[in-house]
Image 1 (spheres, rainbow, N blue to C red):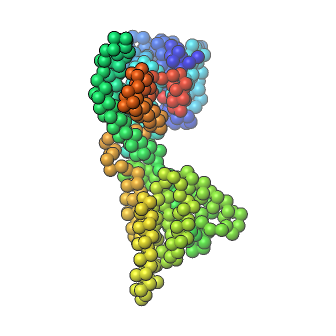
Image 2 (cartoon, rainbow, N blue to C red):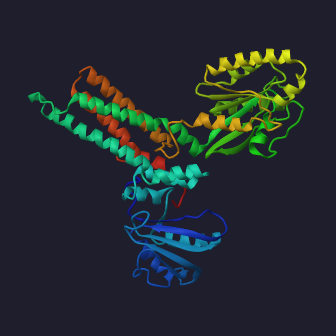
Image 3 (cartoon, rainbow, N blue to C red):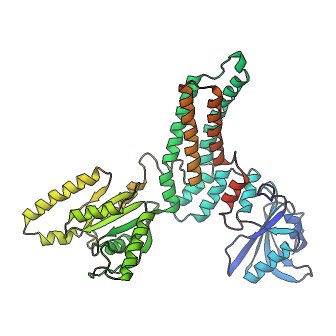
Length: 478
């Protein structure tokens, strides 16, 4: 049975987390939800109460044996989350009580809900569109103020309104092209091709702006994998501890102290950075260290930001360059941290000539990597907490586009991003066909493809497979 067809029966699920708690909430939805609940409720007649009211009573089984004292919340269609009759049973949080109540209902014409089925019904019944439905899952999973605010904005229709407006503009013009095709034998032209091109340019610009917001949106939603790498004793673990403001990693003068990957999260202006302190890069001295270095490379491949740390007192820029080249992958953002500046200046207090020469080497090094878009931060001392704020600022700036703010309409869903790319490709093809004076049939087809891609975002165009894929990721009971 497809997801679209499976919305006529009554469903039930636990809406609060599994396990023992003070209370648990069991939710039912369907045309018969109130009537079936009324069979096992001893209190007011639920068929006669008004919507959005709460009633105290008892749930009893088929033999009139009391299961629990409960509060029943009634939400009558269409003024409910699913736009169906909805009942929420607040009972004591014993898993035994929860299971007794759910088993009672599933033995009496009620089906256990699939993952996300309540929200699926809300979508199918027109409560909100598909992008808003997906925002419900994002809201539940939000771990920061920024991810919460972004999910709320999307639930309120931020993305939907943008997409629907652009889609309607295309639909209006597509209708004129379709009309042309109906009168093709009369050689009548209803659609002004120059106006169509301007419209496509306008829509492409808007789609590009939305697509560019995906990096920020994805970072707010999922966090940014950031690997701290470098040679042994470069100060990687000290830097991690200072950024976290806690002693999370063991710090020692003994090279190779970090054997496993240590992962922690730091929040910078609403963006979660998943910091990973890794084993120092060198030829392994034993099997355990070799595994640690292997894990380092695995984490590097999973990361979008490389925070490379080197010891400024052991200045060997050739080695630094070799390390970075071996770690870098396409699309990776890189911050190079020259650490231990406090120790460096102590060693060179009376040797100004050495400082000047090595500063020239650093400047040359900086200019070379700056030309590749890398960020270079000299004069950092993790031990003395010098330059740490600059590292945080640099991390944040690598993620946030200055033209896009958290208050903008932001794409955070990879499915939406892919649909935007598909729409852009279709419209760019339409422009090429217009310039090449190719038949309006092909231009109309390109515009239909663009409309379909945009429709996939809001659910104006959707399939059972798409719905199954999206809602199967929801928790049961939502």
